[in-house]
Amino acid sequence: MGRSPCCSHDAGVKKGPWTEEEDKTLVEHIQKRGGNVGGWRGLPKTAGLNRCGKSCRLRWTNYLCPDIKRGNFTEDEERLIITLHASLGNKWATIATHLEGRTDNEIKNYWNTHIRKKLLRMGVDPVTHQQLPPNQSHHHLPEALLWAAAAASLGGMDTGALMQAQLLQQLLRTIGSNNDATNLVANLAAANAVLNSSGSMVPNLLLQDQMNCLQPGYLCNTSNFAEQHVVQQHLTNDTSPGTSSFAAAEQAGQLCNTAASFAPHDAAPQLPAQEFACLLEPMTELPDLCSLESDSFWKEILEDSYRL
DNA sequence: AATTTGGTCAACCGCGTTAGC
DNA sequence: GGCTAACGCGGTTGACCAAAT
Image 1 (cartoon, rainbow, N blue to C red):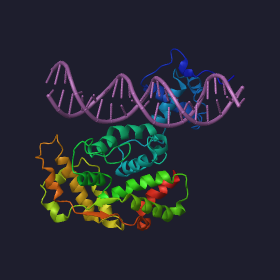
Image 2: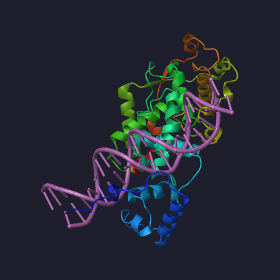
Image 3: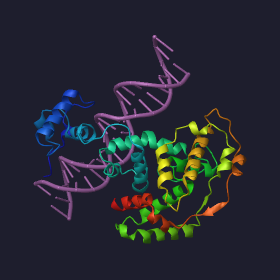
């Protein structure tokens, strides 16, 4: 014979929201045992709770556990979630292990209610992290604008950096079995091979004087999640040879806000697509990814991924 | 002021995995 | 090794609240 039946099959076990009294009983019981739960199945009986063990575990791990950090997600946490989701998918429990004090349930909820919608607004598929085809994009904006908006929202990266990130994600998936951070350069070289074989090209961002011809007022929109300090960080720490300067990040941010102001639901007048076409520079080749190895931002992302 | 709509998040459900027998 | 229940995870639901109409 196997184990005895699960308590959840018991009739009369209470369901629904927990009362303060129940919370107190559960916390006191677990604390009395020095945080050692033992088995969840037997806990309700010994603690004197008319609840399923499963319900007790959920209440403790998602709400009552003292290690849980409450409050809004920070910009850094949001970026980390996006980065981890790009390589792990909906592995919320695994993602949660990389965010101290956050539960899988909390991250999952935050993803579904905030991040997912933001990505969709920017025309980025929240499942694949790839740009949506124009007919599936919410805004039908020119490709370069969508890239720039997504890039700005991912923390002030420019368009080229975002494309590199996505290619990097693909690379990390393929080298997932190779858990060795010392091969960083070798794997970046492999990424170069991928880039070269795919003939990847990125559009240049707009020049500053070209930006000036756009309408004023787009800087006030804060719907994107590129916090100013992240951009400032680029200004002070920008040693990344693979990305352009702070000016480019700022332009990307401006583009993001511009994109928002041209959203169909917005009252702002829409510019015809050809107005944007004249603003785009000819395509340029991606830089050598090996050069990114010296950049702390990229190095961190790579090494984090190796640790997963 | 009443009703509708949309957002948030705690909690439940069901399934795959793990582990006891 | 096969069966079975416990556990853990991801998907989904529904209560609650605030904003919009």
